[in-house]
Every structure is written in structure tokens, then in C-alpha cells.
Length: 167
Length: 167
Image 1 (tube, rainbow over the protein chains, first blue to last red):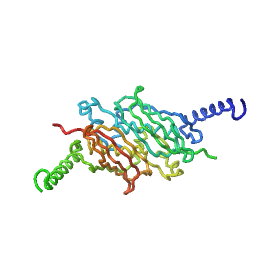
Image 2 (spheres, each protein chain N blue to C red):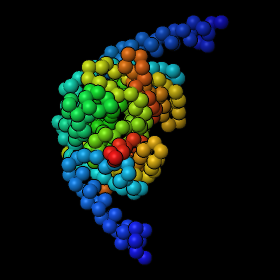
Image 3 (spheres, chains in turn cyan, yellow):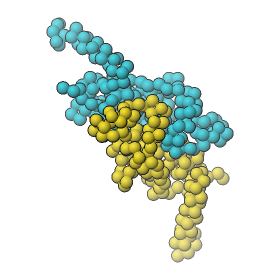
């Protein structure tokens, strides 16, 4: 088959879309609703440092000793200081806010299950994968995960409104 | 009626419980599962400053311009820079991590609906209210809200394990 409905045309569209997406991702701009497809995915990875935990404690006011007191934390079930769960969860919003969809995203909701703690120095990969698209409302639902060395330490769902491509 | 099931005994228990809670809250320690009742509530309030937004951007990597670029934000639907939604949501975890139940809390899950943006300089009150108690698993479910000037700008649920009173 050939023409606008043919295999080559679909391949060309897919290629163009991924090239556009690659550029947009580099520039941290916007992936418009019209260019988002089921199964699309994006990631953000970050090593969680001592400075992050101190800054998150300052920002949130959460100075629970399991985060800021090494001696207390060593005596706890965690055996060492751990990151605030909501710090890890924040990496999910980084992906939707800077990568997919990126600029112009309106964040509607987030659910998170905390499955395992994150220790200082561990590198967390936050990943979002499109599971539902609502063209009428321009809503995108993502399955969201955070992983450390391949183990899922947080999972949930994001719901956002993606900006539309300007006409 | 009198005795351990009477009105005075219940009043005395309530009084003692609130006195204990008041002291614990001041010292930011633990409210044990056995001392938590349906309807118990705790709050944490904080003014969201420019420094908070910059620190949260650094911690999370979320440098979406609606948070850090005043000119971009003025041209957006929000008309000014707004806080990261997960920064506001983080105040919920501050309440459960430092007040109710406080030290020793194990955070299992959090859901959040973002209902309105938070602007620089606005003061957010995060409030948790006990809605379910599971004595077998020591689990506490909270209805959670964040308010600005009495308006609910975030709502959701927390599920935690509260530490047990040492015997």
C-alpha cells in the first residue's frame, strides 16, 4: 500500500514524531496532546544526596529524625537516614513538568504508594508511561514508577492536562 | 453513671489524652496508635517563599518555567509564578511525620488532587484528620487537605502505619 494511509506514510509520521520529540525533550519544551500516544514514556533520574534531604526538610518543615538524625536512623528499622517519600514522589512531577508533556502541563492529581525507602546516595529513576488519553478534555493519565537499581520503590498514577498544539 | 465506663471516666480519659497529645506535639514526638481516635486532627502551616520554590526546583530537578521564570509565568494562565504542586503536597507528609503520628510513622501511600495553584507568599495550612483505624495492622487513614485563606487547594488521603505504645 502507498499514499497517506500506507505503511511508509505511517513510518514517516512515527519517525518525524520521534525526531520532534527528541528535540523537544532536549530543549525541555512541550509535547502537545496531539503528539502523545498510548505507551509513550519519559524518565528523569537523580542521585538523592544529603543536601537534597536537608533542603527538602527546610522546604517542607519535615524534620522527622529518620531523615536528619543519623544516630536515631541507625536505631530505626531503616538502619540509616532515608529520603522523604515526597522527595522521591517529586521526581514524578519533574518528568511531567519538564519532559512529557513539559511546559504548559496542568497537574490534576497524583497517587503514590511508597514501597521501599530511598537511602542517601541512591539514584532514583522516575518513569511515566501514558495509559489513557481523553481527547475531549486533553487529559493524559500516566502509570508512574520510581526505581532504584531496577527495583520499584514507588508507584502510582498521574493525571494531567496537556497543552494543545497551536493552530 | 460512674466507674470506668461512666461519663466522668470518659472525660478524664479525653482530658489526659489531649494533655499527653499537647506535650507530644510540642516535643514533636510520637502519638502512638493506641492513643489515636477517629476524628483526631493535626495541622502544619507554612508560608511558601521564593526560596522554597528555588530549593524545591533544585531538589526535584523540576525547573518548569511556571515556577522559576516570572515573565513566562505572567504570560501563562496563572499570571504569576506558582509553587510546585508536590511542594504543597509535601506539607501533608510533614504533619504525619512530625505531629500525628510523628516519629516512627511508616508512610504507605498518599493521593493528592491539585485544585488550585499556590502563589509566592501565600500561607498554606496542611491538615490531616483520622478517618479509619485498623488495629490489626496499626494502620491509620487520614483525609488530607491543604488550605489557603480557608480555600481547599489540595485534597487527598494518607495511609500510614503508626508506632505502637511500648509495653
